[in-house]
Length: 330
Image (cartoon, rainbow, N blue to C red):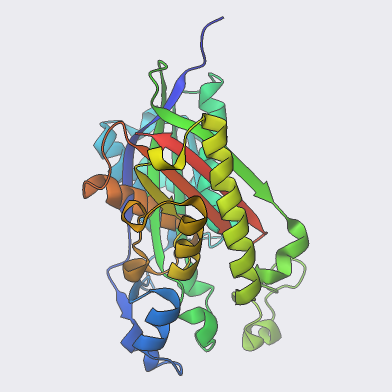
């Protein structure tokens, strides 16, 4: 019996809006300050989509950059997954819109709604399909325009979020020790009320009253989310390390979901990974939900923080609740 093919990461890309909203800008919108935001979150600025820009615009550009790095034509992609909760339309999927924009006519395309964990859920799904021989290449995208789901009068949440997209191109090939070594995903729907948009879906449509009350915007119980995020992201990261037979000290770079620096520091401490091996860019982008890990991964590859052969550990946590992890040898 032939060995299962490896699923290697052959290209990455990201795209963010040009418009930047600083903490000082926010202090003129709500009762806050640069010091208050930085101390509690680590965020200094975030990118915000212009009125004419859509989720699929950033997702498509991130895909183009990942394809360009790999020297691959979009027509040769078999799957296109977009992790997002801020799609262009209720339907069809943003993945289908991106497919058309980049010319990936041969790809099966669909969205993954797992909030901040959406990108890693996509990595797991794509890896399983490619490793089984059902296709050669998959684009996995995390893309959000959270500014359109943000209550700009709620200072506890409006300071956190930003817009943007990141993408990776995965390719099946001969086993060589590189590629996606392990993945992990879990959910707990009993805790939906901790992090959600309470209204605005089919159960409670976006009536004038709902829109006026802003109950179709992001709602979060921060202290509870913190506890679950640290525990579950840490457990997910340890699960993939154990599955791959890898020790934490072998990891060249840990890329956690960029939620806030307190969560990042707490998880790194649990895993005993020193700060110099933890990638943090939340200061420049804020929390971009499903886009945060692929944006960071692309940055880390392009700025030399990681190189071919390095082990990269990724972990995420989001509304649902959802959480997951992936271990990749570049």
